[in-house]
Image 1 (cartoon, one colour):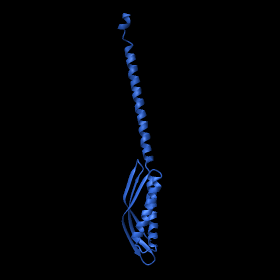
Image 2 (tube, rainbow, N blue to C red):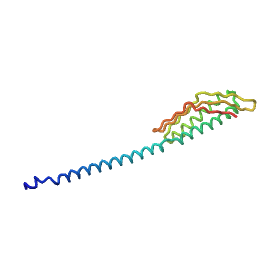
Image 3 (spheres, helix red, strand yellow):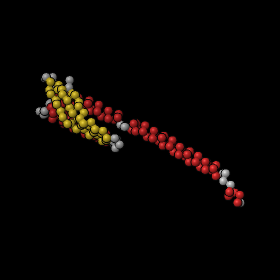
Image 4 (tube, helix red, strand yellow):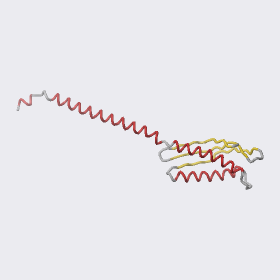
Length: 152
């Protein structure tokens, strides 16, 4: 038994085995972390709702054009700005309800309006400044103001 205690030639082999195992485990953890980081960074780009934001801005631009035409063709005795504001308030309530059904918050507000009546053919031109905010719980987007040209 005394001969086994004095024999230390196997200790170097065991020590090198432990070092090799620890380095392989460390390398496996680093490679795994690199893969997870690549996966999450590529998904972050896909999670950004750019198409929804584009849809909101393009729909708002088209609706502002239509609202301008509707505001001019009203037979009531109100001004163009009053008619425009009432139609725009209806539009923003509808957009708010539509996106709330999907769990998203869309807020539209009219910040400035420069509409002028052109001639006697019931047409108007000018600019409308609309504040658009979008929030889906993960992404907050604000376009303040979105300048929309309306007119003939």
